[in-house]
Amino acid sequence: MPLFNKKSTKISNPSPPMTKDPHAYHDNNNYKNPPIPTAPTIHHDSMSNGGHGESTVTKPQLVFNCQLAHGSPTGFITGFASVKELYQKIAECYDFPMDEILFCTLNSHKVDMSNLLGGQIGLNDFIFAHKKGRPKEVEIVKSEDALGLTITDNGAGYAFIKRIKSGSVIDRIPHIQIGDHIEKLDGINVVGKRHYEVARMLKDIPTGSTFTIRLVEPMKSGFQGIAPRKGTAGSKPGKQGYGSGKETLRFKANGNAAIEDEHDDATQCGIDAINSLLDSFMGINDSELATQIWELGNNKINSMDFAEAIDASDLEAFGFTDDFIIELWGAITDARHGRYKR
Image (tube, rainbow, N blue to C red):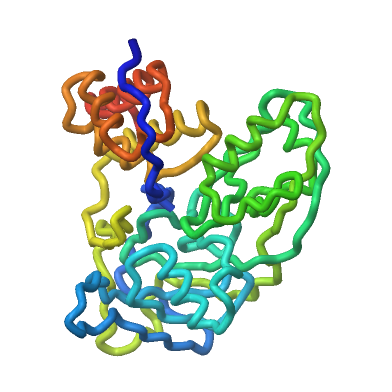
């Protein structure tokens, strides 16, 4: 008998974990002062909405430094409570459409998936926005069951390639790179779909068949010395750090954003282990989803209670198998007992 029954409810965007998730997959730098801009600055100070008798989300009024990854002046971004709102603020700051942003990295202008912005931003993190670059179409023969892709998304409708397995079908195609946005599959537009939906579409392509994938790579340009610095030289008088580096701004699935303490080692190891299982079993990478699974299981005493918690949540729509539930539960209990090393 299965651990939980299928339901007809649809998943309500389980916030990708952008991840440490989802949703943060980055280490926060402990700047003692905010990063010092190294170029003329653009100031964008758009605070939270004023109340006019309406119920509004309270947006943390924190200021984050931002640059375009291919090179730009530094912008100051504030007044957002979700990944989509963050992208909108960046687009307004630099005066281009929001849908030009593929994804953001933290503290690195490179297409570095280990520093991908997910569902959390450290209070001292420096944001780099990667814009759309050159589109390309590639015809692929699916000669093996697995293509060797790990797919994630930016939380705003764009799925892209997070990892390529060495020696895989995709690894043998030099035109396909990490960071490429998947726009179409055999002419079907996948913009707006979550990464697990795109992964499922790729998995469902029959082995031995040929299909066409349309990709958009991140914009590439010479980055001439524009980057955040840790030093204090040239800092403005009275300018204080945004935080200790041990707190993060976390985007929640309900649309709220909250400042939370950084996860302890056991919690982070558990989230990382769950994310690895999602990668291995489903071909997706979503630290926020991994965080959500951890939180559902962290206070449970056995796998049956854990399965029931998943069954009662929006994660039921994933249709996790009983065996996969057991694997997830094993990762949670191993982390609790300190069996993982960071």
